[in-house]
Image (cartoon, rainbow, N blue to C red; front, side, top):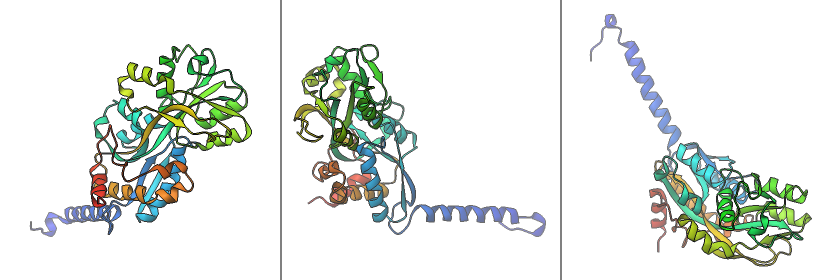
Length: 323
């Protein structure tokens, strides 16, 4: 292209230079020597009093140290279903979610969900005062019950457990859509008869509650068969024993457990996901010293992320460390 002053091509040249400069600035701002994109990455955790929040806070520090230039923004949420919505919509690049919530999630864009790692198991817990007459889920009929927030994994499984126990979740109890921190306070204050929770062991809010208010965990394992029969997508649940003395003087209880997954989206950078996967595995002992559930993260089981396929970045990491 030739230009003369009369044709005034300077504006076009300036525009081209501006475009090149913008692209160069974008590239420098998003990628660097580590090969992964730099900048802020959203990470959805859960309610402030839950294990998701604790784990996320410690993982944030480790990731930012191991991956210079990456800044992790932790986003509180209602829980698993909310987290799935946030990842699919692009609000967050990463999140925690239970396998049952993933299995039953069919909102628009669910096909784009991918897994980074299987982490630890959540235990389903029905918490009552130690002197409560409640011995099984069916005994909750007509009571004031914390059922978890609407977009939480707790609420998802609570509705199913109540149903198979013969209680209508909407009319058979007085449902309170509370997070675990609020539910613990309401129970101790006498404003709640029981509440459901799904979380890693121990959950800080329950530990604090048991230190000042005697509680008991009601068995849920007897509902496993009925749950699987009525809800085909509930295969992620399995019976497991909640150990004795997790909360105060509680006895060992047969309950249900479900795997936790670290999730992402198929369009998130493979190099970023690979680096995050490496950080999750490498940080196990450091984080596990403060968040007990993190001790259960294991390289041998991390790849078993059903029902989600592994993200290609996670695959690259696991292949790189395969014996």
